[in-house]
Image (cartoon, rainbow, N blue to C red; front, side, top):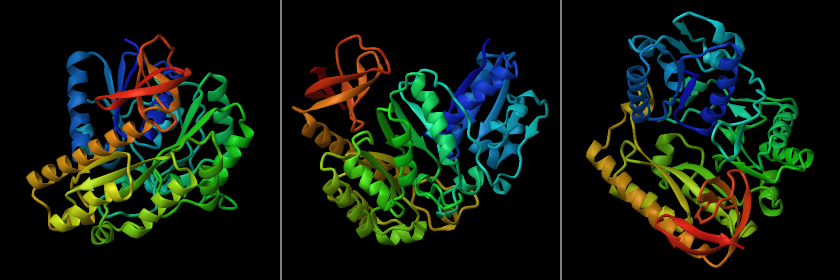
Length: 411
């Protein structure tokens, strides 16, 4: 059996899974299953443990190796699972030599890691776009979040290495790249001269002129630099799609989360983005049921969706993570957390319907992801009839909507 990789969580994990695929192949590893875990919520961990047990049932003789944030934070818990043969830390999983090792636990002190090595990856299995890691770790301490414990301090990939990786991916035929990181807008603070994310984007687009589309993963609204704002306004190859790490629309809850922006500041970011690029699509991460949230503070988050003109929502029911300040705050009953998450998702569904309806009658260049489906520059989902190959970009006229996507025909 060739090595299988099961990936949970973020785009950064997706990128790192491809790094591990190459290392495992080079080490001659076969008849193995690698599970790359996520720790952002307790549900993510539950799903990973469920997948591990399923993999053992389906592949009784395979070697099961578990890594990722959940394994980094609590390696002993995963090593104690009888289904697992080996546990690798987040730093160790990216080192070629780790894949020739045999110890049951190889997990170092992630907080001691100070550099992020560039990893040359030339492709992504079954994906039409490629991910490009430019930043790792996080120096902030939001009260609900354990990810810094799994990823370590913020550190950046030097721009030259980012450009080299982009050239490799574009040469392999990828027409859209997505810059990824744990705290993407923190890029450069640890590098000589402290280059900003905007300066990296400008350099990348200048030095890789054959790159057709560049997309960014989540941005912290408190850290968007002026150069990046100029590129959002003027650079057509930077996709008109900004996803913001917001978490709440209420100032008191934001303060208790230890976020660094206010409701007014975030509304100003949304207005500025639309002023600079009127057609831009805005998405956001929001948490429902954070400790101490009452109906009034939740209503302010719910109202924020319309007031900010959001198009897409990623909604997370609050999940208390061990050893975080939020886990020690007065908790909202779980049933109420689920109910508020459902209301927030309903608002997100309505926002998406409005956004899609507004694009009917326009044209888009759609990146084909699979037969009959792709995404526009604005990351809008588009369904179509035809046999366009995955990875192709097709100009389409958007003629209507169905369910949660636009309907396109060749223009």
